[in-house]
Image (cartoon, rainbow, N blue to C red; front, side, top):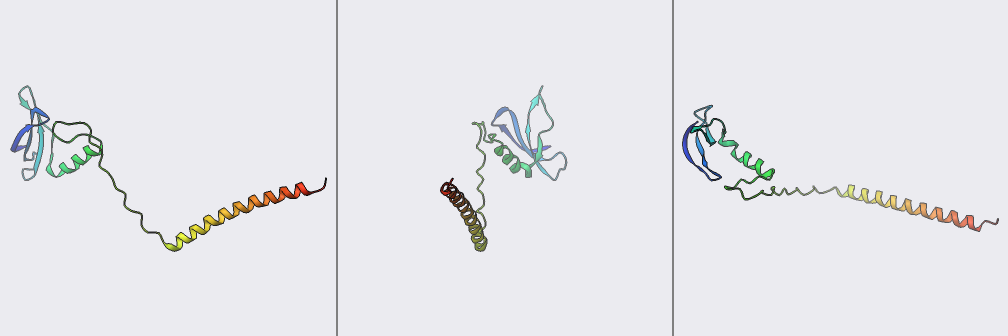
Length: 125
């Protein structure tokens, strides 16, 4: 990376956040979280600036803080479900009739059992 801008990382004053020409293509811009070991800048940690939004969304989805200094887990974004498409009125009536038929059938079964029991009780022994 050829840095164009750099500033001290708010989450760690011993590191820098750098913005500049990417190491893979001088025409692309990348961003890097830079840190040192034994006085030398370490390699890696570089990614295209275009991926930044997706990276932040990924961190939020999994409850990681993305503000400087942390501050605890960030609640996942609220997902609002799309309203269900309107149902076909004919299909709604057919469903209602089917449910009513099941209810009537169950009621008739109870009546039949009750009538059978009454006939059995009334039969001379």
